[in-house]
Length: 193
Image (cartoon, rainbow, N blue to C red; front, side, top):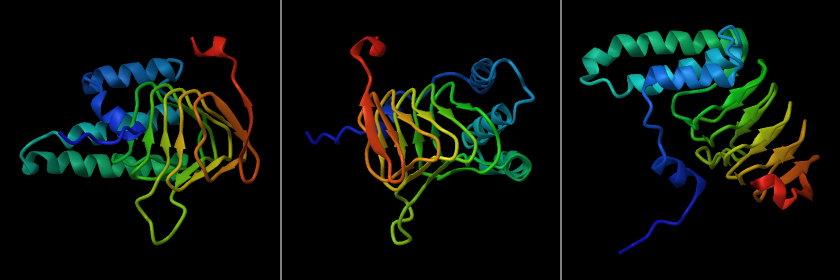
């Protein structure tokens, strides 16, 4: 028997939410402070719809939903500056705290309960490796203006400081700041309970 190497991406594929579209949107609404006017909530709701519509068969029935999704996706991207394509693997209760200049690579993985703020880029680093993208664990807190580039793995409970440029992996429970980002401290074990 051949076993696959363990990664954050494969972990989230196994733990795919069993919630329906409406239940996921309700959960996201609560995570965004029960405020449907927040751009972050709207972006996540459009994302959830985009993922859901791909389950509709046959393609002929899916076509009008795809047209609706594409127009909503462009509206969110152009109005709020939040680029969150449906191909991202987005965990549960992810909060997009603010709007503007938020770019998320289509092959990113973002774990449960993460927070992403304005000006954040989760993207590729090299033109000749366009599919390499960041993989975020659960409860990752990404500060405003942070750039996380390339095939970078952030463990659970990682904090990324504002305007940091992350080019290498950050182990679970660590805080990284600066350009390029360096780990500054480790969280105490009592915080991980």
